[in-house]
Every structure is written in C-alpha cells, then in structure tokens.
Image (tube, rainbow, N blue to C red; front, top):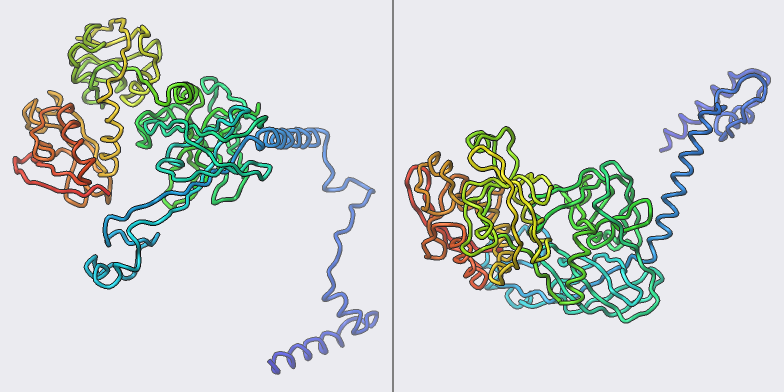
Length: 506
C-alpha cells in the first residue's frame, strides 16, 4: 500500500511539473479528477443532436403508445388480486425428503432417513402457495387457476387497495385448469371480459399478476400464437401464446388487450430454468366464460360428447388415406349408441372440419366438442374412401365415467407416457395384431416411464393384471392406479419379448 501511494505521489509530481506553465499543480489536479458537466449544444450552426420533424413525430407516437400502456394498466390493476393459499401436504415416506432441491445426503437412501430422521420431518405439514386472480363481478366472484386453489385448506385474497378477505371455492374444473372463488364484498372493481376469438397474432397484450409475490406486476408483450394445443398442460387446450413475461405467481392473472379487457388467463410457461424464457400460455377468455357460467350456476362443468376415439395423422398415414396434408382427426373407434354412431361415423373416417372450423389435430377436436352445449347439432366434414362428405351430428352429454379420464390423463402425464390405439397401419408396421393392446407413441426424457426402459413402439398388453385390447379397456384398468399410487404394465417390444414393469406415480 505504501509503495502504491509513493508511486501515485511520484506520478502526480512528474506530471504536475511537466504541464504548461499556465497551469499550477492544483489546476492540473482539478482538471484530472473533476467530473465535467455535459455542455449544451451550441445554437450556432447545425447541432448534431437536433431532431427533424419526422423524428419528432416518431417520438410523439412512441410517447402516445407508452401513455396507452399506462392507461390500460391503471384501468386493469384494481381488479387484479393476490391469492394466498394454505394446503396440507402428506408425505408418503422418508423418500419424499422435504427439501426443494436435491440433497447432498440423497445417496444414503430412504433407510438412512427412516432410521435417523423419521421424527425430524413430519409426514403432514402445511405448505404455503400463491397465485393471482381477477375480479369479474362487483359482488366478489374471482377467476383463477384450479392448480392455484386445488386442495386448499384456506384461501386469502388481497385486493389492490390492501384489503384482505377469506375466499371460498365456488367450483373448479381440473380438465381446463379454471376455478371460480368468491369473497364477501360489494362494489368491487371489475375487469371487463373481451372476445378471444377476435385476437390476432402480433397484437400488444399485458400480463398482470404477482410473480414471486411481487404484487401488481405489469409486463408487456405480444400475442405470439393462438390455438396452441397438444402442449400437455390440461385435457382441453386452445392456448394463447405470448412473450409477455410470466413467472411463478402469475398463474390465474389476466392477459389484457389494449382496450383493457381480459382476453385470457395466464396459466403456464415453457421453461428449462423454472423462470421466464419468452413463452407463456393463457386460457382463452371465451372458453373460460362457458366454464365459469356452469361453475357458478351448477358447481360443475357439463361437456359435450361425440363418442369416438381418434388419433393424429402423420405424413405417412395421411398419404395412405389419400390426403395431401397431415391434418384432421382419424377415427379409430366409435362407441355403440353414441352420437357419432347415430350420425353414421365409422372407423377409418377422418374428421376435417367441425362446424366449419378446420381440425388440425386430436386435441383441437376434443376441445371443440367438449365446449359444445349438449343437444347442439353440428356439421362435420369427413374424409371417407377418398371423398369428402358432410354429416350432421347432435352432440350428447359426456358420460360421468368419462369425466374420470382427466385423472387418467394426469396419471399418464406424470408417468411421462403417450399411448394410442393400434391402427391397421401401426399394427402392420410394428408386427402386432390389431386388438393386441395399446401402443406407446411417446416417452418423456427422464420421466418415470423412461427410467424403467419404456420406449415408443412397445405394446402394453396388461394394465394392473387386466388384459387390455383397446383404449377403452386401457383407461378402465388404469383407474385402479388412482388408489394404489402405482401401475403395473405387461409390455411387449416389436421383437416379441415380454416383461413386466412397475412404476410409482409421483
């Protein structure tokens, strides 16, 4: 340190004595170390930072847009709420170690913790969670996500003005991830509901919510895409995709257009880090309107039913059926006495349009049918034997036993499995018989299914020791796993080798 000071003094002395005689040492040091102000441009000549009329006009337009965002936020924020939830969590065993990240002691295994730490971490404990919501009626009805309030022991809603209220659940719909809750209050600010059918890709939108508990956070982006399905988040998907920043805690908050209307409910993000990566998904508000009305009036959702099992087409399948594009939904089974059977739908038909709307994939068709009021007559365009044909079908009411499919789909999602019925083309390609079982078409990386060696192309012949020949039998047999927390498959690979796999559902 002393050496550094000596060098600094020598530096100042050398340079201080070598400057022009018009400067003393003090003047030089002032020039060397003082902070200079940026001078105003000279009014003489043509200053470099002056703006042309076109540039000024562009800035004024940008300022108007900025003001518009501020006005939309001011209008919408009072109706956006912070939802705090208390849940009781039950651990099944010591393997469920209550740390949010991997523990350095994991290699000791469950026996280690069973012996030494069994009484340190209770099997039942309280867990706090948080999300967002928005008020849709002056008397306290609030929209939020089902996954925010599901299994809640206590729900507290905090308004933008700081007031807090206990909330009760009016109804939940896990299949769409929509929930309605209510607080006992009057004359509340309401967020108007827009028309999500009129949105366009590229429009500005605003996400409002409470990411990481930071209340009344506003982010701005655009609609990146619409009609997203097959994402695997819910059973019925027609998502709006946006690049407005959405993070944990935004769930249940509104996606707002430039008119200050909710056109969606923020629900999920695509992420590899746990945080925002530029892709967020919102449930369209028009779908939510139908669900909300039923939850408020009936406490449950009654969905439309067609009565078919369908699968997506790939290029090879489309070509084999005489189609130029792999779009539509291929019918593989028609339930007896179902609306589809009464309308004359047959196995091998490809549904191309539904009430004039082109069908891109199975998920899109399922959502459209489910959102159709039972008793409604719809017109479908189908492809049969190389020709287009129109048929009319009266949509029925989804049977109660089919409502359990959401639980079964959740089981498959947690296992990391995608299964489909055997079509003649798939059976011939893989060497299976037509009614031998259901085929695995997808296995998520690092999923429980992947860990036990399941691979696409394998055939599931038994589920929980029940022989299965088709998707209906597969789903029925899978219901037992809801109680046991595990599933037992007998699988066969294309080489003819069979083996059992047992998978715990986590």
